[in-house]
Amino acid sequence: MDVLSVEGGRRLAGRVHIEGAKNAGLPACVASLLVDEGVVIHRVPQLRDVSTILFTLGSLGKRVVRNGGSVVISEDGPLAAEASAYSVRKMRASFLVLGPLVGRLGRAVVPLPGGCSIGARPVDLHLLGLRALGAHVEETASAVTVTAERLRGARVEFSFPSVGATEQLLMTGTLASGVTEIVNAAVEPEVLDLVELLRAMGAEIEVEGRTIRVAEARLHGAEHTLIPDRIEAGTLLLAGVATRGAVTVVDVRPDHLEPFLAVLRAMGVDVAIEGGDVTASAAGGTRGVDIRTAPHPGFPTDLHPQTAAALACAAGTSQIVETVFEGRYTYVDGMRAMGAQISTDGRTATITGVNGLRGAAVEAPDIRAGAALVLGALAAHGTSAVSGLDKIERGYDKLPDKLQSLGANVERREA
Ligand code: EPZ
Image (cartoon, rainbow, N blue to C red):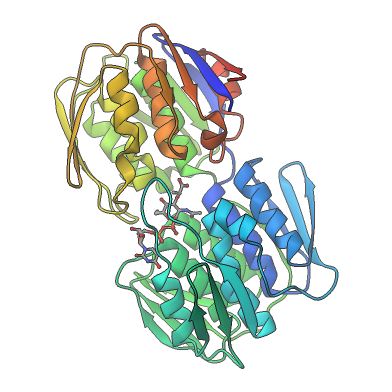
């Protein structure tokens, strides 16, 4: 397991280019299952999760060619209806192949994704949507078998605006007859990026607030460039904030970052936007704030741990209420090991800012908690060792190089 060795206490400053969004790229790759023509996707980050989804598509019969940041996905022969446990267990987004396969083949067998460190992560809303479209769903403890003679458009109302379930139904709805109406849909930028790709593929989709309507249409191949990764951008801006430096993220969509930038401003961070570049400077330090995560356009749960790490050294107390994932507090133990004063009570984390953190040996429990521990280590005085770098790199492409380019003293080493 690789370790990131961090010599903390240095102010980070400079410009860093942001990759295409992981959470837009994964559903975009899956959307290629909807057609037998070629789909080309640009600005695809070089991440293990992307390799996993491309492996899954290959195992289902797609031909996948990667060329730097572009991926060309075409169909060489008949698709398989069964996805391997390996890929779905490894990465839950592989579960999104279910609806497209049923729409194309009339049948699909996909292993159930396990929970993970941040929560139970059920798929009941995915299955509710498929049943509403007329599919027959059979669940065992480890997999689901879904069959459908012909999918028929229907109205589906979600009890929670689930990103994955919205994407599952969006894609499946393009292969159903009539109109599929998703009520209380997720409208994260990554979901709307999938809508753009599906429209480029010929889908007729209307988005009105949290209601999305998908009409039956003849689909074809397409080419699409992913939106930039707002979570990577927020994480790197926080690397500057946590070290009282000034980082500029380049070629991003500032409008996608707005809920997060509003919190940075409330923390006393100076935020400057110039076209697609955003700079966050915190030379004068920061103050505590209260945050409540929520589905977009609320504060993104995927930036909760990293923001908590920056608040660990803010002046005053902060409270973060996590409303999306019950297990989002996996960063707390590692931050405490560095001297942070964080306590949790139910869904609320209370952070009392301290003057300085101290280096420690910590382990990344998951992608975003791991990123938070890296930020804590960058802010801490002394040396830290953050193990589980492979988990962090599921969501961050070339993170050590990017941090070094901003002046951080970090080094990857074998455990
Ligand atoms: C997506 O996960 C992202 N992953 C997550 O990013 C992100 O944190 C999450 O959306 C919320 O924004 C990808 O896009 C690949 P959800 P997803 O379905 O689709 C409950 C990262 O670090 N729920 O919106 O799994 C669920 O338990 C990852 O990049 C049901 O109850 O998220 C959770 O409490 C982590 N039933 C809430 O909804 C369902 O059928 C949000 O889950 C589905 C979800």
